Image (tube, rainbow, N blue to C red; front, side):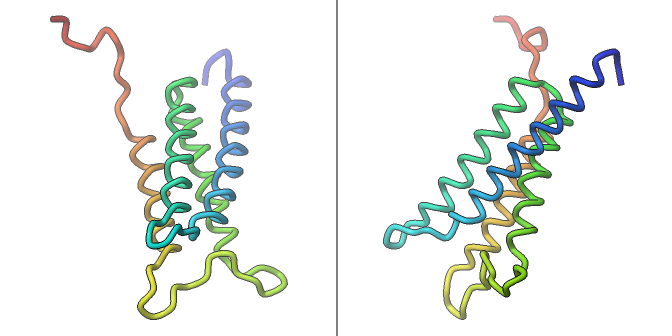
Amino acid sequence: MGANWPARVVSWALALAAGAVFGVAGTITHPLTAGWFPVGLVIATLACLGLLLAVRLLIEDRGAVLACGLGMIAALVVFSGRGPGGSVVVPQAAEGEFPFGVTWSFLLAGVVLIVTAWPRIRPGNARKQ
């Protein structure tokens, strides 16, 4: 690691916590609709994408972005299961209904994968015209 490994570990922990908060919020609100339009799904995806992009651009450490994404996915997994009282936050879609839970799972995983894997663009690498 380097001389500043404590700062990196703290940034990873804070990114994990922020990702978990956004993951919980997105998992709870993703099935909201306004008529036929999936407002909750769009807002939850954009919010998580925005947080991941902010972490990626501000910290410039893939470890922090990955920690943030893992926090989001961990919150999704925890809240998708059956709770101690038997309640389910992300129910299975009924026959003929749009599968919001499955769509949210794939969208979140895709957003985390794309932002984490996106190559770093340095100003010195760009072509000068």
